[in-house]
Length: 270
Image (tube, rainbow, N blue to C red; front, side, top):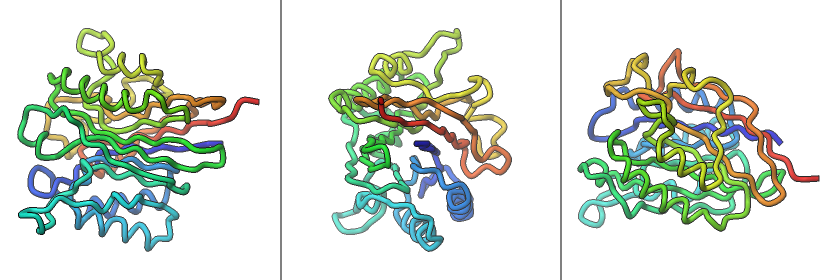
């Protein structure tokens, strides 16, 4: 069975920082309808009203995508005024039936006000596929380049939660770290993921997959590199092999990130 997994930080921040949000979300719907990846992991989908409109439009295309119920959860001002997403800006979509989905907020937060305000975490979504159940995990780690210890603590929370999961796991999102640091050594975050049994889906050269790039017209940060990943971990009697990797939205950016699309082959042991 082939399974395509798309991760994309869509930069839909409601009150600060982003621009052209309505137009960009329309183009995202068009892209998903044309390409139909099996699972979609979005980050920074913070605006509840735009998220609702996005899902309604995607549904009107008869795209076949299913969204978990928690995608509509909102935080409220004064206890009753909806104003902000309550699932860390994460949206997980699937063209396969969704069995369950739960959002877990990180106990560890970045030091900046925006990191605390955004309420980041990870979403675990169990999906029923023709090869059996898989767990799709969507996350967004702390965004300060030097805040390695916060990211490592967040990863520990996430990976501890996945330790006893025996079904195949696809883990994707915006990890806000590259595989290699400026000295060419593997980063602590990447090493921790490997120690937990996760493998990188990349098929190709590291330098060809700069998902956060100065070439992007929406980019306004000095940092650049491959910071958006799809990892996988095989399950009991289940093998996973990466087939292809592609950058998405390079010629016509939809966000300040480019999307990353991985195709995996999932098969059961004979």
